[in-house]
Amino acid sequence: MTEPFTIRVAVPADVEIICAHRRAMFGAMGSARERIAAMDAPFARWLAPRLARGEYRGWLAENAHGTVIAGAGLWLVAGPPTPSDQSLQRGYVFNVFTEPDFRRRGIARQLMNTVMAWCRANEIRVIALHASDDGRALYASLGFEPTNEMRILLPTSNL
Image (cartoon, rainbow, N blue to C red; front, side, top):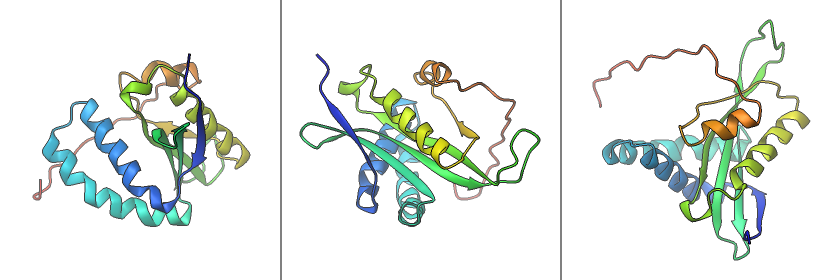
């Protein structure tokens, strides 16, 4: 039997749980602990004002005891019109994480459906994300498709 859960909107007081999920997500994908630790405080400083202003939207799943067991975030990003989308705003999904004991129960799917419904209601047509190997099948089943994005990570002197 699947334990019931509810989904609620993240509020500024949830910054620490979102950061904890982000640490665990990167850890599960094999990032080095030192790099995760170095990211944590700057991410919290980035997140807090955006969450308060609504530029970052978050949804958290809670079990019947009120414990946060999963979450997903959406960063609203300004962008120029393209041939396929003339709107000026895009959505970037990240920080999708489910606690290990609660995986394979449809929680991440429900979170993503909630994110996508919010985007539809707010006329956000383009939603992008970077999928982990574990998440790729879920996103594909929801209609996400691989794109031709390329990237480079330039070295900095402070790493």
